[in-house]
Length: 154
Image 1 (cartoon, helix red, strand yellow):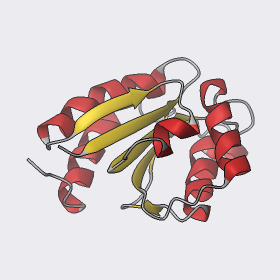
Image 2 (cartoon, one colour):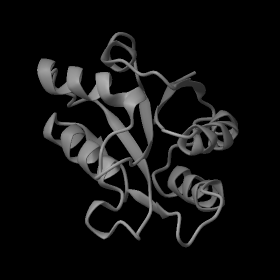
Image 3 (cartoon, helix red, strand yellow):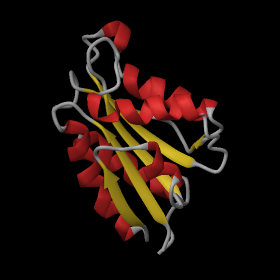
């Protein structure tokens, strides 16, 4: 059974809630799923990762949430090269912060691609000004992502 790892960057729990809500969709598609809410680089590269999903909220002026800061710093410092990594990304933000809307997710996406990782499909950006419950946008996106990227293995 392939492994899907969900890496969460969250300040108040919204991104973790999204991760927990989409987990069953991946299990139904045939994946073993593990959620990392205090992720480290070793969580990503220390054991096989068949597919990764990043659920990241934005804090401050487009900053990575504190629980994911160490992961990002390790990734930047070690520059491990992620040419075998296939991933999806859900970015949570608030468009009233015009210049930094989904800034953490966008920055992480750029960093992952800079390491050679391949994003499957488009990044989902969820705007708190338009979507009260982030999982209302994330669940249909994940269903479509699994279908269009032909990720179902079961």
